[in-house]
Image 1 (cartoon, each protein chain N blue to C red):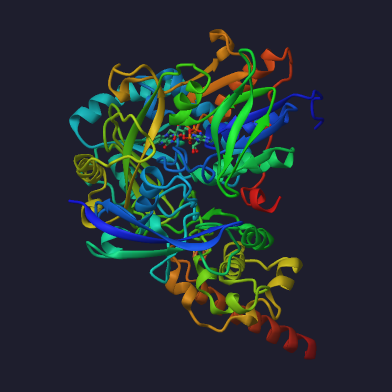
Image 2: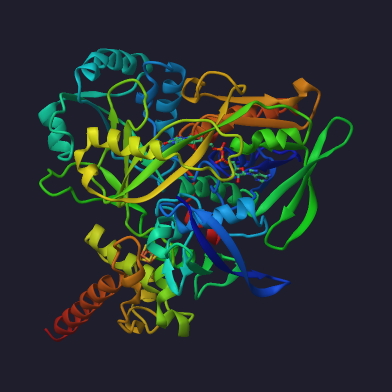
Length: 391
Length: 237
Ligand SMILES: Cc1cc2nc3c(=O)[nH]c(=O)nc-3n(C[C@H](O)[C@H](O)[C@H](O)COP(=O)(O)OP(=O)(O)OC[C@H]3O[C@@H](n4cnc5c(N)ncnc54)[C@H](O)[C@@H]3O)c2cc1C
Ligand code: SF4
């Protein structure tokens, strides 16, 4: 593969799934990239999420735009990311009559969004997942999967590094460098060396997740990001092999994601101002146990191994509808629209759709420089996350 | 109800040397030792550096020594680590180069894991009573390095391949029902590999993910001994 030739440089703020995928795409399109992340890679929202490689099933009735994005990206990641995905499938299970009423809607949604699916009888479902509630009435199989968020980011970043990117964890952006209405770089604090300095670039991409608003403020721009946390409870032991979703409208505690030695019940939704440290509401945790056990009764008799929470970087203005109602799709802002050149913000979305988010973002960046370089991330197989440490 | 916990954290910066800082933290006993560290960073001291990502023992990044023992602080609940009013002494992993504060350099470790080349995703056994079918799952080893930190041999022989990599080699053989490549075999079957282990079993003691590296090292030894014997007998016959 020949690298497109131009001499533009880019800084990516944040090494969650969004920033990592953006860095990878930028390097493939010939940019000299520096990634600055204030903590460890994936120490923000990405690392602590529910690890579901969405099939789109969870959105196929109410938010088909998201569902289509999910299934497309799910299929792409299977091809390009051999090292961070557990391909175990998922079941949507009907326990109650109300779930059964939802089933035809769900099947229609799967059809409309092109999500491969297979109807299972209660017996078939129980045979696959013996710990399911014996009251289960029916189930639908979909190609859900599980990712390991940090390794997913490291795969993108390892590949970016192999194409020349410089990745700087523990480097916090303290300010944006501005010259006549243009962002020309970042002022950073290296938290390892405990030193502050400037890094210059032709474009700065703000991929700071729930903190994107704080970064945009440094350029005097208002980006409406609503940090919307959810609670997850990691239980002792793995009690399901596939992802188990409740066959109904999205609600709290309606999914149990298995990963390695644990089954993780999630999740809920509320809003916070500060995403740095989030208090965990006790009633949310109780709800996770109750709702999780409706699908997998065994969860009542095992102890939790850890409870954790993190905030979605959802787009919307404060005071709007409750968190769950906000769009799950992402938005890319070229701040030239507000009169600030050299500065782009990408927010919202999901880890599952990080590659697509990066494609859109880098399309926007290329357009700013009048470059017509096609995106090649759909077909570029990523390096192992281990290469991040050994390159 | 929150508990009052004293965190004594070992600090290190390249040009400032080491010291121990003390922090008072109010935290619910159901939260984790890692949450307490993040709370200190968020509310008391933004200069504290530490590694973390998944908070559920999957990424393997947060390993530390707490009150003298290797743990993953993300799954160590405060109530299981101490009592109300208690103290947590927090240090970085042993036997790794310290970068700053609680951050260690994992590069030498991952070089070894890469050399062995165990795929991190593999086939998994079905649950009891379940028909086997097709699915893959992450390997148990989360590459956290706790076993290396606890291993008395790693402490004295910096060239020792270490429990995680040796366990990975055994797993490669098990999963592929095959042999190791010549390169891997050379790394495993030498004086800094398989035969260096003292069978102290500290690694299996601290492993947070049921890998049982010590058990796997013993199994690998049996395989290798058997192989050698087979070759010997083969050569005579
Ligand atoms: C509870 C919950 C469950 C979820 N489950 C799933 C799921 O199962 N599957 C899925 O696909 N998606 C899931 N998501 C959504 C997904 O996690 C997020 O959309 C995604 O992780 C956002 O990634 P990001 O890179 O935009 O943000 P982040 O991961 O937060 O990355 C932003 C980074 O910027 C860094 N940063 C902040 N300020 C600065 C600064 N000043 N200087 C330098 N760096 C800075 C932060 O440290 C952080 O690492 C879930 C979200 C939540 C909240
Ligand atoms: S063998 Fe266990 S302790 Fe060692 S790196 Fe793997 S998970 Fe960690």
